[in-house]
Length: 69
Image (tube, rainbow, N blue to C red):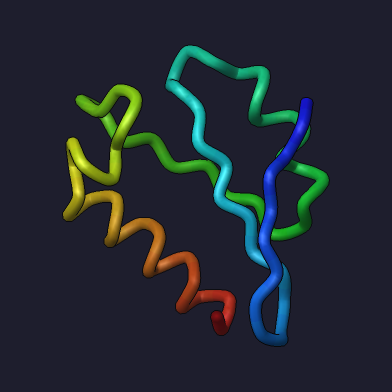
């Protein structure tokens, strides 16, 4: 598996892993990232940030706030 990343600022590293509900191959490697958390957005397919933006924002912004980012 390859991972794209970009480095900005200081502080803890944050990774957003995006996978389909049925694609469990993404979840095992993400557990080695430290504070991994799994969230499922039902009714979204390839672009949850566009298909279900309110739920996507709630999940991502809540995770970032919880970890002080």
